[in-house]
Length: 470
Ligand SMILES: [Zn+2]
Image (cartoon, rainbow, N blue to C red; front, side, top):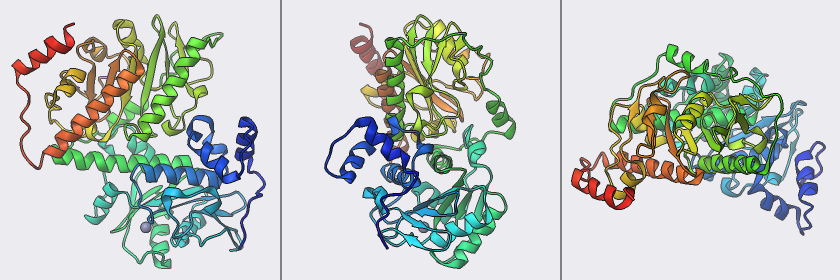
């Protein structure tokens, strides 16, 4: 065994090092420093597998979706080498040099032992050449499903059926055993990209690691939404027809502009959007597969997130400029662009919009339970009353949402789809989102201990006079 520092094709690090022209003492120190801002500067798909694995396991650990010892990730190279997380190394402080490589001939390269679950990773790659990355973990909500032996219904939110595909189910076997590998590979041989492991956890495949992570995060989100929804009421699921309607909302209809310019005021907004999107992902307020953020630039022109770019990996060049009703050439803005345009056109005081799925708000978004924000003064002052509208009210051509929104009605729940929050500065809108999610969380958590007693009308009027009617 030896440390494999000089691997051909390790372009990403060389690029970073020359980019920042850093002169620090040790390689590891440089890399740790840079990893903190990696999301903002790197194209994940072009990173070396061991850097990708380190970054993704870091996200999974930080989001509370794996324990220090549980879970493993792998990526297969074109030459058949499999890069995999090591066995028995702290997931919270893994560095790229800890990632193991198992060559096609079985040679093991690296300082540790490969993951104890390596046999099932190998079994999946053997049977599914289209799968290039695998994530296995024991995230709490999916484990809840696995121990009651159920599969979450991904029709709970608009994009999940499309992202996750049908979900397989592998019966229990001893961890690390070849028998477990056989059971899991059998499920993947049926074409599934995601499976629930009985009394164990979940396994997700992907065409690359970003794809696998997006599927993992989305499936866990579905599980959480169903669990929290069932805590407060009865979840409603979308029909396949409703999901198809959502999938066709792709705004290529916005004509491309002939030429485009990027003044500094425009570039500033791009960075603002990227920072808020990354922050929302890190805080558990947005997942890779859904989330639209926009901010007004000037007049009714704005900048908005694109379609089909995983949110954790959003880069400033991905953000789309919309000017005079036209889109930046060569880019596809979010599905909700039409809605954002209408909101800016009709509401001059609204300067930023966040459309996202956060787990506790979505509990109210998938049930008929009232999201009553008359819980604590902060919640009502920030949100006032939050209407809940039917699925489809955000589709192109519907004017219901732009008409309801105003400065005294800044947030809306859209059933089985999202929460929409508006505000002046983007940071203020983000703060509102945080307050809304906290309020929803308190309401869900209070359900087992008693009925929420809202602050009364007189107290609300008092808040209005002191904090809003200025
Ligand atoms: Zn496991």
